[in-house]
Length: 435
Ligand SMILES: [Zn+2]
Image 1 (cartoon, helix red, strand yellow):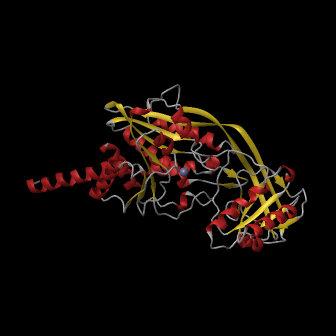
Image 2: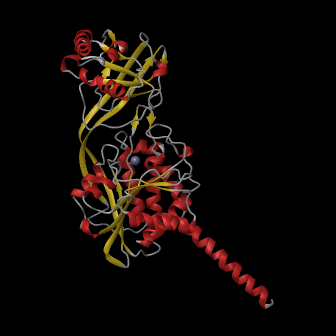
Image 3: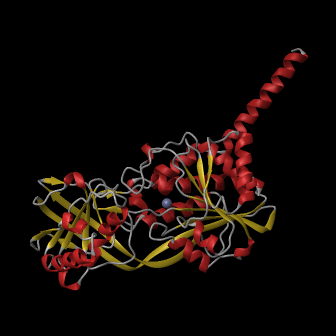
């Protein structure tokens, strides 16, 4: 072998090595297996039915152990309780058709149990008169007086409201709340809407039961049958999962967070929450997998939060019961919705922490990782918020693009776009290393 060829071979092996190191840093198999597992039937949408959230906690604590994370107390769990209204099942049949939960209709999350076995007449709300009531105080008073009489002891149908005026639309959504009266305990409200149906949770149970229905099923006569089975749980027990990896300098800490809970399951309908937020947990565990092999600069704390969908409850509990001084947190990165990235990422608090934002933008420009990094100001829309309110420097990062399924049964693994996940991972890792 002559020198020239040997030289070429060395160069070749050097680049081969570079490629394989980069590939090893992000273990895509591990990443996707976590999303697949957490969004599978076994975890029942990581909510309040079939032990979904708590089974996910067990699975995650095993991942922490597998990555050799240390814990602050006797294990990785930080346990806390909160009230939650659990919708076990909800059924609705209109004009002979059984509607699909989460797709065709939802129920208001604060609904109590109700059933069509209690027969009540229907009152069809007069939308034309309602719109007219905005014209003057006189019309409004007259409308309220009539409505008060007509609605008594009846089920209520709220027809689709077409109005170009936003405030009228807004009032209409809240109108059902005035029917929340003790003397109408067995009634149901059927509100038809053209809005996208977005499921959510409630920490209280109200005295009314409301169905929110896609307006293509609008009917004034054909509600065949309906039921809601709901249990108000005063003390649901949930767990944050917390562990850490020591760095070269442990006076400062970098915290990575991602919530693992989601909306659970209603009847047979599972809300898989593949993007929201099995994907964020998978990205957090991928960073964990990396830093347990390559010692970080600072101590790295990883927190998988519970109770986010019920109102950032896990993060809120943590900031009031921190496991190490909050002042040691150099920076916190919260990952929620990592299921896309074809259109880049968005950074909440980018306008607050300009230096760090500039840093991540520069890394992205130099390495050409993602299409765009969009900036946002503060927003209390995920688990970074309770920390931010306590003056912890923090970003909330979410991916842009994908098919946009959100809080519905279609937020599934097969609907994600994970082509850019490797680049998102490298951007996050380089950013953490630059802190
Ligand atoms: Zn989320």
